[in-house]
Length: 247
Image (cartoon, rainbow, N blue to C red; front, side, top):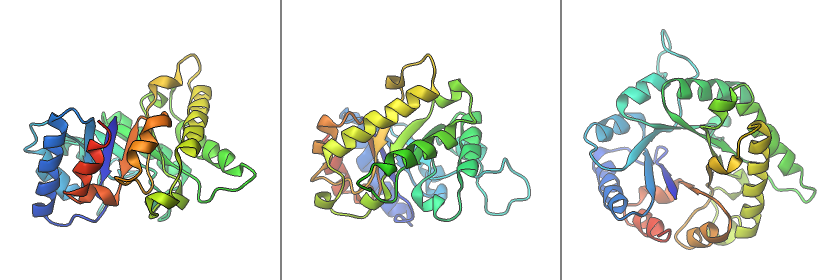
């Protein structure tokens, strides 16, 4: 299992960051899965600089630029130099601030060029009874990775995050049957974009109201390869309990 902890802007000081990092290192040593932490940029650099554990780090986003006179931008090369090996790209919160499919494709290209493994977030805003959400997910995925070479496409991890399921309780989030359907569908689309290669080698994660109460159920029968966890990942007590459910 690949477990990606997206801290967003919940963690704002080094003391809390250190507690979560220490808990993650202990979890990683137990074989609970591959743990990837995505702290805010300054904390990522500080933690990764003294990391001697199996825990890996991810950028929460990368710039669409490659450097230069772009105040406030953090490039893929900068994140790689700071110790990141993954990059979350296309998160719904970034899309809401203006990231288009073209910008996301550009960010994917920059991440790959600097050795970062992209975690591409896709997901529909609402689930209609006619299945139009499937076409939306197909289009979102296709537009993001179609500009890339087949070899580059094969390196991308997909994180399915339906926007309607974010911020809900476990009871109101996605169920294992619906998640299994989407994992199969996403693999079908990936297979079409990877001619001659198996989509089974492409990892598919799930994110959206993942909690201790539902993570084992979602993992057991959906075919998902791991989880992208937001708010629950920043509690040094809850996060270890959640990860232990996946043993």
